[in-house]
Length: 298
Image 1 (cartoon, helix red, strand yellow):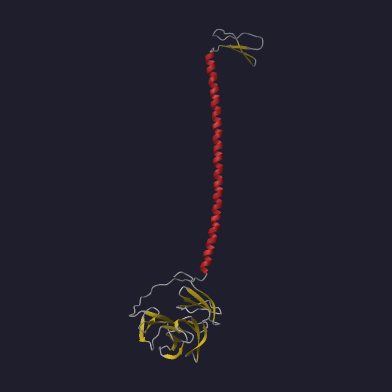
Image 2 (cartoon, rainbow, N blue to C red):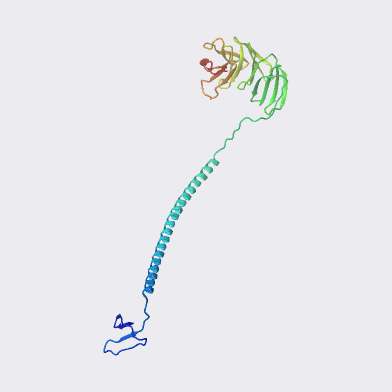
């Protein structure tokens, strides 16, 4: 039974099912029948309340965990977003620099070059001995083993052929005097544009090869243990020996190839190949710079 006495609730003894209100002076007492709760039911109720409290606390913990996980997920995302923004700014800057470089390069003059290209094949009845280029007439002159001179255009188109006036082993073109210079083993000859002999000069030593120095306007020949420099005279119709180098070369030095230093500086150098050796000359002064032998095994 539940007894209400003012603001205080008291358990009273069990009374009949009817509700009885006794007259009291003060305060008013109300008696109400209540169902008796068994101890097992009370224990179950307490257990349910404990479980509900545990479940509520567990759910709160799970909510806190989910909130923490969301916060953790948000933090890396923001960091990735910031890094992506930085990389994008860097890419934009580098792209702008690349565009500026391309524009600057496009405004510069372009110099295109390529290697050797095959234009045409020319077949001759006899082996080729020497080829020279006439830069004024823009033709190639070919001397073959049958002592025939063949003239071709720069694109390989055939123009003419004729027999050389004398037996020759080499031929070159002196552009500054517009003359051809030919040689055999014992002499040099000056030829005009029609391959007519203008003059002849003997050589004290055998001649194996020759070339023309446009910088010095000189003819350079080499052969058996010698290098000789020739100059034009008498209206470029004759040749005269200007210098001969033989000291320091040795008796067995037979030069077969010549090459000029075309750097455009004075004094001009010339290189000569001899078997497995090579020599360097100062053709401006007519002196030997160095001579090396047995540079390679072959």
